[in-house]
Every structure is written in C-alpha cells, then in structure tokens.
Image 1 (cartoon, rainbow, N blue to C red):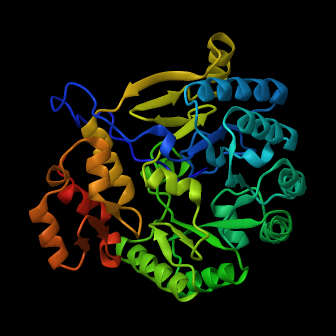
Image 2: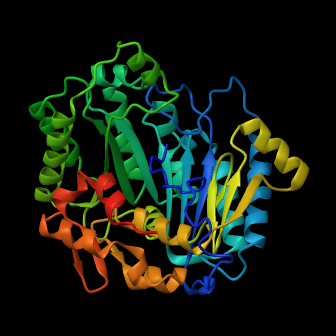
Length: 408
C-alpha cells in the first residue's frame, strides 16, 4: 500500500543543462530522519493495486528478517548522527509480518539511530481476523499507530475491490486496533462505479462515527498494469464520470471538515495534531531512508532506489549487504521541483524561501509569477509573502495548476 506514492521527476529532463553540480542544502543534523520499511507480500493482489506487492506460497521469514536488518544497517551507516522521528511499515501487507520481525527491526533501528522522544511508528494492516490477532503483540513490539485498510463499508463493494475480508471482520479488526494502538487511521476508497452522493455520504459519516483520528480517503483510479486496467481496456469495467467524481471529492472535504477532520493533504484528513508525521516528512520534502524491496530514499542531495522484485532484492542483500539498485545525485532544479510538487499537495502549501534556501535556486525562478497572479485572481491559490498554497477550489485542478506555475 502506502498509497501514499511520492512524485518523481527523474527521466523528465528537469535540470538538464541547468547546473553542472549540486548546490548547498541544509545540515542533515538539523531535524529527525524518517524510515520506511517495505514488506512486499500479500495474501492476494487487489485488482486496483499497482504497488510493489506480491503473492508467494511460502516465505522464509527468518531469511527476510536477516535481510531487512542488513539493509537497515547499511542505510544507518550512510546517515550517522541522525535520530528517527518516524517509522512506517508499508507494503504489501506488513501486518502479515511476525511481531518478532517487527520488534527486531525496531530494536535495530533504535540501536543504529536512536529515537526521538515522540517517535511515530506506523504499520499498515488489513482487517482480517488472522492479522488482527497480532495487533496486541505488534503494539508490544513498539508500533503505536496503525493504518487500517478497510477500503469500503459494504460487502458488495469489498468483493468488487477484491478484498479478502468481509465487513463484519473489518469491524472486529477495528475494535482490536483501537484497543491495541494509541492512534488509528482508516483507509477508504470512494468514487466507485455507480456510487451515489447519498451512498458515499452515509458511508463516510459512518466511518467518521468510529472515532478514529485520521482518515485516508482515495478516489478509485485505474492504474496501468492492474487487473482493473485490463478490464477497463475491454470496456468491462464501468467508471464514474469526472463530474460525479469531482462532486464526491468536494462532498468529502465538506463532510470531514464539518466533523473536525479537515483535509490537510489531497486525500488525507485528520483531527488537528493527528496528521501522519511520517507522510508529512515526504510532503514537506524532508530526508528519509527506505529499506526493503522497491523502497526509495532521500538523503541530503541523493536519491536511492532498491531492487523491486523481492527475490532480486534478497539476492542483492546477500551479495552486497544491501538491496540498493542505484543511487542518483539530485541536482538543484530537480530537488526544488519535487519540493514544490510534493508540498503543494498540502493545505499548508510551501515556503518558497525555504525551497530557495535549500536548493540554492533563487525564489523568483521557482514559480511563474504571472501565472501565480492570474490563478490567484481566479481564487485557485494564494501567495502571501513566501507562503504559496492551493485553495480549496484549486485542489480539484492541482495537476493543471502545477503545470502552469512550476517554472523549473
């Protein structure tokens, strides 16, 4: 899962011919580091999922634990003097990991880096009874926040989405999660075929009534390479029209705001103070390390990419002591553009002065001032001092707005 995909500009030519060498960035000791741990295995592959997830008949968990610890140690050696502010176990389905494996990873992470006093440790989980049975043990291992993939509150919708659980199992798992973890987030997918405003309103209000502090609410999208994409290509998968989907997006933001869980990012809603600190590190373009198959990382001015196929990653760790496939220097224009594209997803927007300072690119070169002024006149964004942010009406048009205003 985390859906929760980072935007990437590599291969798009940004920065080509602009600079011969990277510019100075902030001191890496200035702030905590985030750590992402990828567990790639699932019980089954959901038809909408394009994440790095795989189904395997057998998994040698002892071998995987050993490899994750080796990959972790390699990453820690490259980031000395940092403390961890957040850890996120994503996948795949990391709730399929044995609690002992999670505990071993957390013990090693604390030994290598040290933890901030208020560290956030999140694990993504599916609401099956088998996984819910491990929730208390995962809490004892150190997990203090769970992201629970309910995805729908209707058995027919769950079957359509290819989920392996039914609603009664979901609700039992939710009860177990709320008893085991200090913080709980729910994932739901909306804008499903033929879903009406009334149906989504009822489902969303019911989800809010569960009392969790955070909701991740994603519109169903047809991603290339998925089973849904193959069905759509054959005309065998109905989809909701753009106008209907836009109305559901607006309705979602209105209902969650009224309930005290306003959107702080396009698809994420939280009570004030309950935002995902780990995902905020991505969106605020802070440093993070990634270990496990397909994991990405950002360290200072470099990006790391680990081998995606589980067996290839495992072989690389055994051979090299780490699963890195490649590392790339991120030149100033790429870093600045990524910071803008990530940060403008947030309700808080971006601090242009900070991006200029950390990339070395002059503030006036970051965005097209005329386009910003024009779009501000249409009520789609605001720029007050150094703070640039997309307004509520502009979030529906974010991709088009970014194409207009990002100048680098």
